[in-house]
Image (cartoon, rainbow, N blue to C red; front, side, top):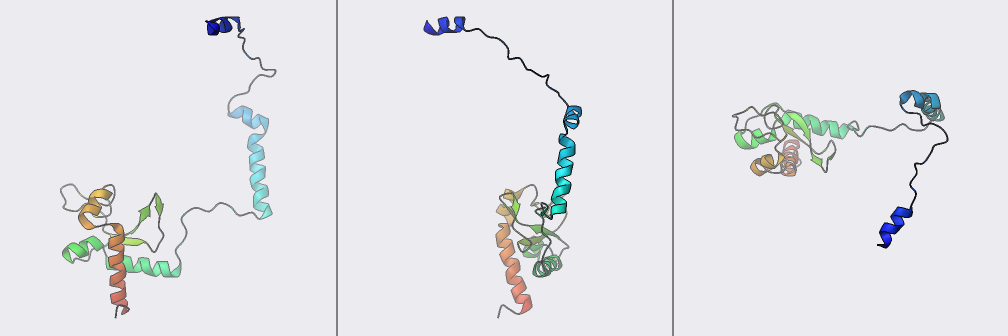
Amino acid sequence: MCFCIWTLRMKRSPLKRKTPMNRGAKSLKAAGFASDRKQEHKLALKSGTKRLRSRKVPPTLEEREWMSFVASFGCVVCWLQKKVKSPCAVHHIVEGGQRKGHMWTIGLCDPGHHQGAPTGSEKISRHPWKKRFEAEYGTEYELHSYLVEQRKLLDGKGK
């Protein structure tokens, strides 16, 4: 009962603005926001501050050698299944939505084991069927460790 009396006694009136509210992109330019942002960007470039870099870092010499080995080795899955050397795409291992790096790559044939396996093919693509791919062929880390062993054997470091 007390609540009802309190609400009846309250006077409700809309808040009134002293100045009208501008809307849209025209008003932002008129207010000077767009030009200020451009000026700040020019000042930042002149002052020598670093610009934001993209997350894709170019590979080092060692990483380039590893990726060229992966590309020359061919598709790991085709090699493990049929001992067939097939041309491949270098696939970066992704964990938690981010690439592990250029040293964490494996070779997967494209189209086929990497992505876009033809309908009716016995191949299971990594994209978009990661769980089926790993259940059939093993995890990407297992395939990567196999590649590391093969490189050691080919380089004569396995002795």
